[in-house]
Length: 236
Image 1: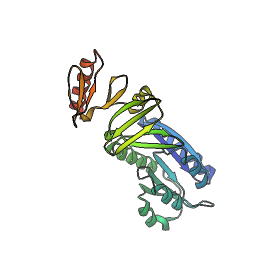
Image 2: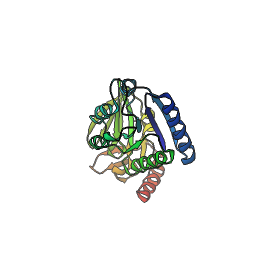
Image 3: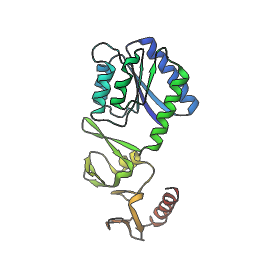
Image 4: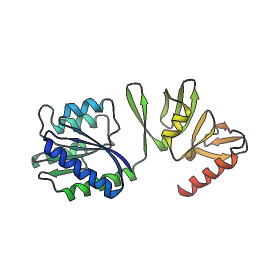
């Protein structure tokens, strides 16, 4: 699994220690992990305003300026998917951790084996949760559930993404969209990408979605798309 993990602590020695534990855990568990470190809540929020794709946040509570609990509350106002793990020397904050749906609360001095167990729990939570796909959207990032994306279509220099929850117009090409979507999607022609879970049937000339919409199929694509659909149905 690919993960983006943030470590936010004003003690440099603690940051280095946590980074080492996370890197060792990732190597042993065979996860691909990007680790970013921050010495303050303000520094994290600066990056977070541009990069909302963090998966796990290892967060100290007592820091100068904004403390970790206030940072967690700010995150939860718009993001319920990030796994937050508090790491602190102050047990009196444990009850507040429930208010922000923290995954766990680890006390300093940190037990590295305990942290590895918590990271394993975070991964299990991600595996149980719907896959999320992140798209650039102007100066922000848009996160959509993969299983909610019905299809995407070319719209000039943009793509129009149709989901069960609405439509989104993003500046990118269809090949770029295909790369981001990954497994579970198929490209029947140059202009469309379709979520296989919404395919009702495949004819020689079109892909029929569950709402009756017909999307034209490029010549010679029937066998490829039919095999992908059969494989998807068997696995899901």
